[in-house]
Image (tube, rainbow, N blue to C red; front, side, top):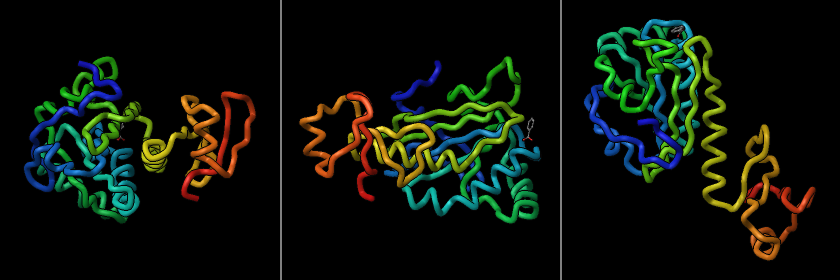
Length: 211
Ligand code: BEZ
């Protein structure tokens, strides 16, 4: 089954570098980011994991728990963590799923057989506190992801959940946002009493709420 936006993120039980977890229970009332790595002891993944650890305070600030996965053993994950600490200056303090039997990778569709029959692609699933999949990214093994983009997506999801707005191209926190097209002007006048800029009737920009 292909996961789609709005689907409930499948629950699972798995061994991780922080012990055995039940995914939904582990998430608790947090947002979650589940991301896969093709293989332990590979260069791009090593840089991604070190950087994720450096960003961990930023994820925590946003009430997001991060969890990695690759189709290797827990022992390999533990040995690799030492390399990551030495080469990237940060040892992953978040759990890494040891998915040697590929059960979680299969559940989430992280193996794309035309890319590789054995390794996962670089998947990212953004999961909200109700366990709904809210966004997904898929990159090939050779392209490292921009983990700052993961924070930006979380910021957009959390902002657009809280206010009737959408975020425009290349939006960064603090930039102007777009009034949701579903909001008629009459309602917009109440929600945004400071006014907005109407570029077209369907394109109304306003200062980001809360700034
Ligand atoms: C890497 O993480 O560097 C990598 C993993 C699998 C294939 C290619 C690159």
